[in-house]
Amino acid sequence: MKLATYDNGARDGCLMLVSRDLTRACAAGIVPTLQAALDHWDEVAPVLEADYRALNRGECDESRPFDPVHCLAPLPRAYQWADGSAYPHHVESVRRARGVPMPERYYDDPLLYQGGSDCFLPPLSVLELADPAWGLDFEAEVAVITSDVAQGADPAHCAQAIRLLMLVNDWSLRELIPAELAKGFGFFQGKPACSASPLAVTPDEAGAAWRDGRLHLPMQVELNGQRFGHVDAGAGMHFPFPRLLAHAARTRRLSAGTVLGGGSVSSPESGSGECCLIERRMRELMEQGAVLTPYLRPGDRIRIEMLDAGGGSVFGAMEQLVVASRGAVKSPPANY
Image (cartoon, rainbow, N blue to C red; front, side, top):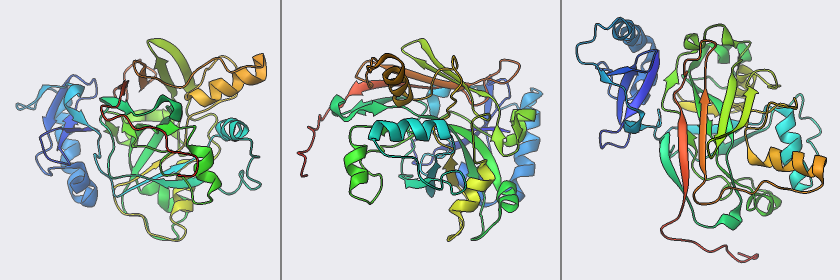
């Protein structure tokens, strides 16, 4: 199934079924929101699936043309957003930029942080930037949405709890992060609200590309209309999603509607490009001795999408325009 959330004026929007070719949509009558569907997945999923098949056959009388301009994030506010960093090349690049070494146990102990889940930005929206000196960067990621996961669940049980896949742009303010992490208490100001793809889809929609707990499709990123990255999301992922979920559930249960990201998609392969600016900047520094690519500024536009083997859009496209904040905020002093 392909699911979207339309803006109906309510905080959590209206759950919609979207046809596989992204041309038609109809309201999911059995439940009002995606969170409600996740809360009662075993009961409502068969009904939604039957309606989805009817929509694809052209048998839904109440369908309308699908228009992503009406979309909120699939979960406009989620009970939990946790983000892993499952791509070694990305971890190495980011830590090189901050002047810190790789974690000693990175390859057997996943990295994970808990981010803000109270607001996921719509897929077609502006991103207000208060101060360009903060170093705005994008991070194109694959994420999963779960049903309830018991505390201590192993990867096999976690795999069964993955209900949906979607894309996330995990915005980062790179120039705020080093000082914030130096306090020893993790991200907060350096990680503003994430953006999400128009659609969340059941894993079967990815076909054979969804295997071994990874999504083996290229993440396509454009910056100002120019190709920036075309990176296989599965090949460079060290920890699969069930392993990341098991790590997250080691000491707590995860509620239905938990969103977990795999981290910025990354590959050391030459020619595939990057899915975030900081990797491009570090590659320039290593190869040319100078950083040539600036962080984002008002007027820059980012497009993130993933196509299947037949060229169809799996999740629809995220496209954000960076604009100057209407209430510009100056950078705080160093001892703020």
